[in-house]
Image (tube, rainbow, N blue to C red; front, side, top):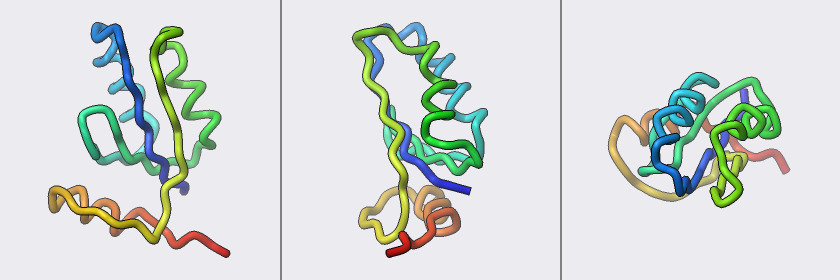
Length: 92
């Protein structure tokens, strides 16, 4: 499985619940911030983006970024534990 950061900025808030359902449907996930999630999935970044694209307008932003160790940061224990159990080291 690959872990990605899914980060987005929606300008039409009425679509937020739909995009959140779609993000969470794709695999195991953890909420990093208001509009950033880490997801662990068998999908490629392109496949994740394709699922989310119908919920985006031309003025919205969305990035799917591969996430791996090492990483630095701190947040809620449940997110830290999720990251520790889902992130792999980047191979050289």
